[in-house]
Structure formats: C-alpha cells, structure tokens
Image (tube, rainbow, N blue to C red; front, side, top):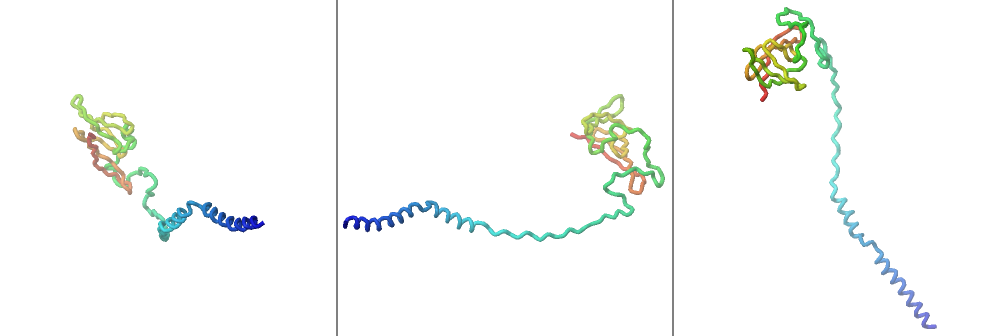
Length: 175
C-alpha cells in the first residue's frame, strides 16, 4: 500500500504542474500583438481641434425705394422726354431679334449683285443671311455696316428713367 500512496502523492504534484503548463499553452498567442496595437493606436491619433465659433449673419433688408426691382424683368415704358431714338415698337421682329447678341456668331460674308451679306449662325445652329438695314439681337440692333471681319450695329436701349439711347455694338467674325 505504499505504492499507491506514493503514486497518489506524485499525482498530486504532477497534476497541478501539468495544469500550469497547459494554461501557459492555452494562453492567446496574439496577446503581445493586441497589446502593441492598443498602445500604438492611442498614441497615433492626434487630438481633435475644436470647431470655430459660429458667427451670426447680418440680416439685410432690401428697400428698393423708387428703383426698379432687380429680380423682375424690365418692361418697356413710353419715353418721358423726346422720342428722338425711340424704336418702332409696332415693327414686326426679325428672326434674329429673339436671340441675345452674344449668342449669335458671324461665320462669314458673301457678295451677290453688289450687295454685301453676312452669314450669322443662331444658337439653334441655323444659318441666316443678313444685309445692311436688317435687325438682330434683343436691343433693336440695326445693322449699319458689314465688313469682311465684322458686323456693326446700332442698338436702341431704354435707360432706368424711360429715355431711349443709342449704343454701338460689333459682332466679330468667329474663326
């Protein structure tokens, strides 16, 4: 009976030692990596900057007074002083008077029977033949001269008080 006691005493010592060794083997093999990631992740993030203070916007109220509303289209008013430059508002509009002048392109000139014509392309890609005396553009633009390089126009515009004035405009040949 001494042997079983000896075995029993030996077993009491070996089993706890085996459990300690097994616990060491069962330990997470990536624990050192997890520690490194946790410590590096915290140190690599810069502190957040605080947001700038929100400044209140100054409220502006538009008081037009006697001035026209800039957000409404102008309507043509009868002239208040002499009608020296007043256009003929009853005249039928030409086909190029529905486009702004900057939307039209002079693409060339031709001569026929001693008459000089300009070739003008509309924004709709339609080609028109224009001669001296024709109208084009939104501002009653009368063609007063055609050269190889340009079309000269006399436009009639209405100012803020209702008076008509004349200005000159040029439509250059587009290469």
